[in-house]
Length: 333
Image 1 (cartoon, rainbow, N blue to C red):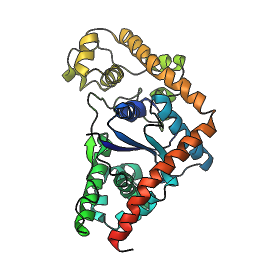
Image 2: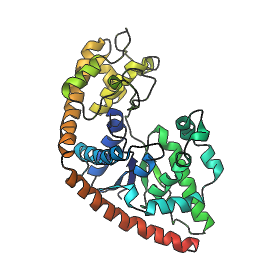
Image 3: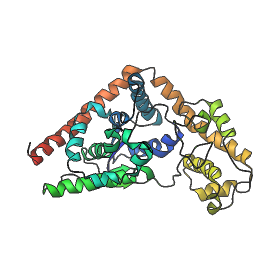
Image 4: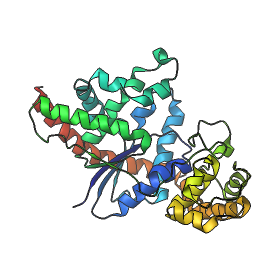
């Protein structure tokens, strides 16, 4: 039996290799499995938990859709839509926020990381958005959610909210309790300048990341300048633990080639970084350039992207509004 899958991507613009290998590549595989029903959401409501330029946000929504399609997600097979156009998400988030408990939200480590030392100045939305995330997931009878390490806690919260709602209203299995989908053979993608930091568009140096819109020369140059250490490539996975930059680059190569770390290390152990970087650049160019070319082409077809969103929103609204109407009945509206 196929899975019902929901996942969301924030429209931050300039998606990079970490976004692709950490999420989008997996979405494509899930989309290609004929048994799965997939819903891919551009989570623009989540994006406004921090300040956004309205014009830029609009462009970023389209760019995220373009990236989905350029990477291989078929909008005919999967639902692609933006969250703000389906009002059931906001409505369900409010109802579920009356079910969620303060203690649960206080334990969310991502808020502490994102708000930093000055959490009194953070928006209420930044604090409570895990409840909106739970609403996103639960509206679609979702059975499985692809998650990375940084989202596991949010999915646990979603499961707690679903179970509490079902128990409070004595309505067994009204909300399905979703399971996490953890990628196999996946290495967390870190900055090319600092192997201890996650690859991020917020890092000031563009050399720290491979953007999905980079051209061949940019990719080769960034890998050439990527930070390494002075030793040859290691012979065992255990040796990588104390060498974050080597671990990151071998992890990127492994994810691109769908190999485990052991196989990649066996291929390159004892060799110097210059030889390995050539192979890594080649693998990146082969994977990223077709995506980059297609994204740039699609960004000139705004009407096409808007049509995909419109159709996706209609399909999503049909499912989500039906669920919200049932929630109304259950809670007594």
